[in-house]
Image (cartoon, rainbow, N blue to C red; front, side):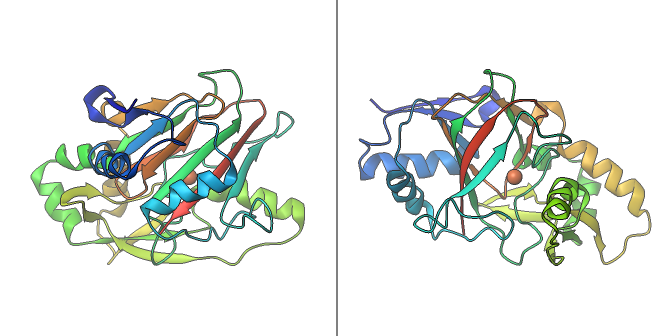
Length: 263
Ligand SMILES: [Fe+2]
């Protein structure tokens, strides 16, 4: 059984299959679907860490994540994203963002495999298609954005959660910063490539910076470009970190996700 079920407006798609039994042809179909829909999810997958790694390697070289510890010595590339019911404050990633955009070469793909989740519908991940966001920009703004870059910092607006955690542990990571063009061609289609969660300024400086920033952030995450993904246990999701913004929704509960990023 192998079936692709696109979401509304083709923002993401569900792939119905058993990842333990797919062949090379299926993998090619999955790669094409990922280009087309930006995010794919697979329900009811009981994958060992070995198989999870093996599947992820089909998409490229695995990246190191500078902010989270590896699952174990044997699995340094799988990082654990965990929230406990007793945790206070916002969850990790609670604002629309692009993973690790403050590095020179942010990962192309991010994968999550759910190990423990709160009640279904309570801790969704929201995705926002930046292909659609670009397509719906007025021409004058497209032109304006096309000539500038964004500056991103690991200590940008979204980092409050990590900074709090670092304080608890008594160590602080040094700030990472990078610049990227705001309009980017990804898989031969234009997309807005800007992470509101890490943005600290335009480069070069624009006169009406505040106004442009407000307009852009508001436009990028309009409801009509969004899809909200519900999690069940043993669900895998992979998304194109360049064409899809994502954010965690606030929740109280226990959750464990195993995460892999791909360069
Ligand atoms: Fe993230």
